[in-house]
Image (cartoon, rainbow, N blue to C red; front, side, top):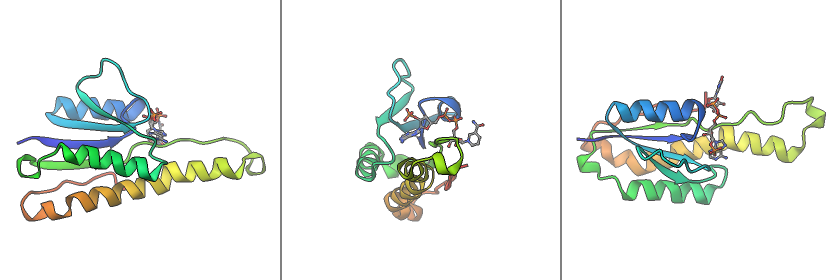
Length: 137
Ligand SMILES: NC(=O)c1ccc[n+]([C@@H]2O[C@H](COP(=O)([O-])OP(=O)(O)OC[C@H]3O[C@@H](n4cnc5c(N)ncnc54)[C@H](OP(=O)(O)O)[C@@H]3O)[C@@H](O)[C@H]2O)c1
C-alpha cells in the first residue's frame, strides 16, 4: 500500500531534499510550490502560490482527487514553504510586505493544515494517519 507525502515548498532547499528523501523511502510525493521543476519526475508538482487561499484549496482538491484512501497506508503533511521576508528596521518595511510574510509563514500553513484535516478526517476510521509539520519551523 502506498504512503503519501504532501509537502509545501518542495521546489528547492530543505523542502526539495525532504521530498526526494521521502520518495526514496517509497512515498508518493506531492509538492505544492510556485516553481515547476523540470526533470524532477519523481515528485508530483502542483503549481500554486500558497498565499492565494483559493489556489491553495484548488491545489489540495487536485491532490486528493488522485489519492485513493482505501489503498493509501498513511499520509503525511509537511508545512515547509516559508519566506524570510524583508530584513530591515521595522519602520522601513512596508505594511504590505509584513502582511505577505505573515500570510506565507503563518496563515497559509494554518489553511493547509485545515484543508488536510478536512480531506482526511474520515480516513481515521479505516486507515492510520500520520501527521507532522502542523506549523512552520
Ligand atoms: N534554511 C534554514 O536555515 C532555515 C532555518 C529556520 C527555518 N527554516 C524554514 O524552513 C523552511 C525551508 O527553508 P529553506 O531554507 O529550504 O527555504 P528556501 O530555500 O527559501 O525554500 C522555500 C520554499 O518555500 C516555497 N515557497 C515560498 N513562498 C511560497 C509561496 N508563496 N507559495 C508556495 N511556495 C512558496 C519555495 O517555492 P517557490 O519559490 O517555488 O514557490 C521554496 O520551495 C522555510 O519555511 C524556512 O522558513 C529554514
